[in-house]
Amino acid sequence: MEIWDLYDENRNLTGETAVRGNRVPKGRYHLVVEALFINSKGETLLQRRAKDKDPMPDIWSVVGGSAVAGEDSAAACIRETEEEMGFTPDMARGRILFSERRERPDRGFFRDVWLFRQDVPIESMRWQPEEVQDGMWILPEKIGADPALWRQLCELYFWEKVYPYLCLESMRVRIPKGVYRHYKGNRYEVLDLALHSETLEPMVIYRALYGPGEIWTRPASMWSEAVTLPDGSQTKRFAAET
Image (cartoon, rainbow, N blue to C red; front, top):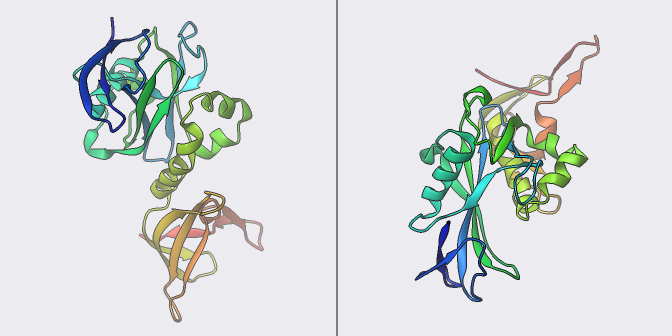
């Protein structure tokens, strides 16, 4: 039997509890956590739910679940990751990316979505068979380009809200701050990355290291893409200086 602590609408503990599967009283909420991971390649971790998992069996998803009585958000995140994927999240390299309060007919809940920068090889993970059947690291933009995978992840109500920020953090890993040289020779300094206010596309903000030092922006997807030279060879548009 799984027991949940209950919170009021301001996320204050009430001292009340509820049993999983029972209706949560109106005006009371339990806590749900989700854990997203970004590795040093900018890839994010997905898990494939077990074939008989209820609800949403046999689809790609992420680590997550409900906090049990006595747990705060961080403790629930650690337990869920250890139980489902067999490794411990590095809390020193994690933060809450997004929080929300949701109302459903049978229950209300608070959701914290955590984001970690952590390298964990797939072969070192030990999945909980009744929860998870497979796992993979994948670049976020490849998720967006795969209609079937995108539909599965959109069954997670929070996915479309956090996806732009996941893409941004992935690009921050792949395009760290520093000095880069354009393939035509000019040098630039990456100041930061940001989301386009209309399209939510990750953008690189950078400063020219010549002339008056103008500040520019361009889509992050263009930054490291290959360009074809007149001789037919290819090179990166911008390459980091070492």
